[in-house]
Image 1 (cartoon, helix red, strand yellow):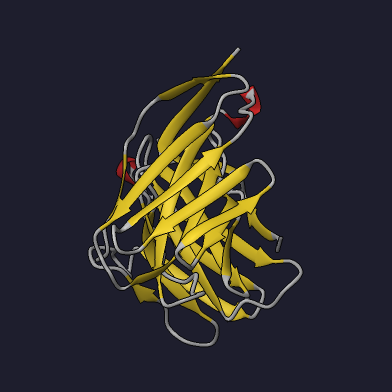
Image 2 (cartoon, rainbow over the protein chains, first blue to last red):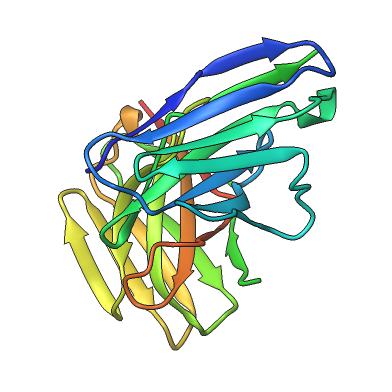
Length: 113
Length: 113
C-alpha cells in the first residue's frame, strides 16, 4: 500500500504554545489529505480536508483559526495547533487517498500540559 | 452526516476460531466500505475494502456487504493472538471513493490462547 509519513509521533508542550504536525505522501502525489482526531476509546473524527493549493475545508465545530492547515505541495500537508490547551490533547492522524483507498500516517500523540 | 455503528465489544474468541465483526450504517448513499485494524496507540491500517453486495475474500479475511440490509461484516478465520486489536468499519460516499469516510467507534477483538 501507499506510504504516508507523519511527524512527530509524540509531542509534549506547554499550554499556550503552538505545535506543527507534518504529513507527507512518500510514494505518490496527494491532492487531498485529511486530518483526523481521536480521543481515547473513541472513533476517528474528521477535522478537515486539506486541498493542495487552496484553503482547507473544516468540519462543523472545528475552529479553523486554531487548527491551521497548509497544503503547499502535492506531497506535504501541515497541521498547526495554535495556542494549544490541555483539551487539545489527543491523537492526531493524517491520511491521503491513493487510488480508491485511504491510507493513514502513523499519528501524532499530542499532550498539552 | 452518515452514521456507522459497531458494537464496541470486547469480542473474545479462542485462537483458531472465526471472529465475526459486524457493522451497520444508516445512510443508503454510502457506496464504499472499509475495514481498518488499529492497535493501541497506532494509526489505522487498511485490511479490506468492499463496494459490491456479496463476499470478498483476502487470505484469512472475508468482508460481506448487504446494501439492502445496510450491513457490512468482517470474518477473520483461524484467529491469532496478533489479530487482537480494534477493528474500525468505515463508509464513504460514491463507489470507490475513499474520501471523507465516516468511521464507527470500533470493535475491540481479543483472541485468547
